[in-house]
Length: 446
Image 1: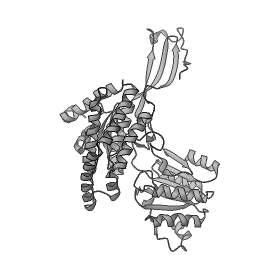
Image 2 (image 1 turned 45 degrees about the horizontal axis):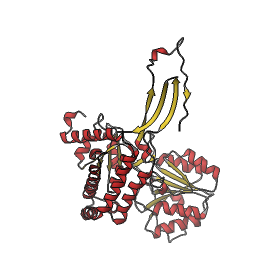
Image 3 (image 1 turned 120 degrees about the horizontal axis):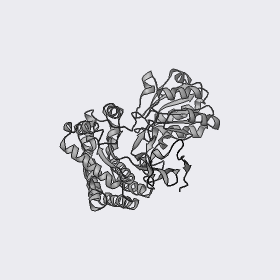
Image 4 (image 1 turned 180 degrees about the horizontal axis):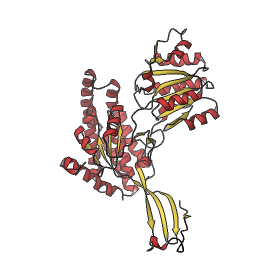
């Protein structure tokens, strides 16, 4: 987008973010950690103000639910409380405790005596992150961006705008108190028009990370002229193999659906081998039904369960295999083999997270190698697909693409690399046939 089509306010904001990034890129890890610990303290000291603003959002969010503008699950994600504020503070401290991802030597090669080449990790630059509902994302993303040396521009949903404002304000106040990090390292935009301008700024922004609804992510992917890292769906599967353990399959299936149904790593489709014990399947579905889950099953599954009249079964349609419910609904399909399960997953899945429950270790390895997804698990709930659970401190989003980062994107996903060449006056013309030869020797480094 030409600068003439961008408002002066947006141009100024992006320019300030770029200037802040140049400072962050040269900042020592100690200074970044100090900023994160100070932010944690600021959050704890201002919890009352945060809760007041969040209460305003909740009142409006409930009205939006009544008008059909917002789902009940999205409304629930807006809510903050003392526990969540403490978790935000602890996230800052957790990120501070992690190693600095920037400035790491990834590879080192001696091209010739006195001519050494290093591949070194470095921050990406200025990142636009667009998200919905959850205001605690403001802190998660800002902490990861600051630690990795990136400047970030945040755009949250209107359902949480007061919470987003106060959290962004507290971050900037915290940065302003510190003379090492410019407060413009973190900033906020609020309107769709501002986003429409930003996504076209290919020469000023380095990356866009959308996290939210399918509609949001697809719209950004369609219109952006800046690289996009994100996922449009979280259509996750659990496959119950004929060699599954009863206890493990029940625990994994129930946790994957019931732990938190309204998130992208919750299971949406249960694939069941036709020789999986029907009594075990009934136990799983009964417990799901008791928890309020609507059961949509294929015709073959319905036949297997005909005599279990306590189960209220709906017939699944083709659309169910491609639907991310993020709600108390699950689709169930019977398959003849693990191969059929994998074909279903690779055809209908969103390449987010899929799991197999089996005691056949050889089959499990084959499944994990063959399923095309960012996360493939064995005897574990899909809900483990999360940056905090992976030990990343937090996550800025989930990537289902095949770019430089895949799966939950933590600190390592917010750095790229550059090549640094240390010479002594050499020129490329000195090398070649009949001239000097390259050594191309590995340099040992820690």
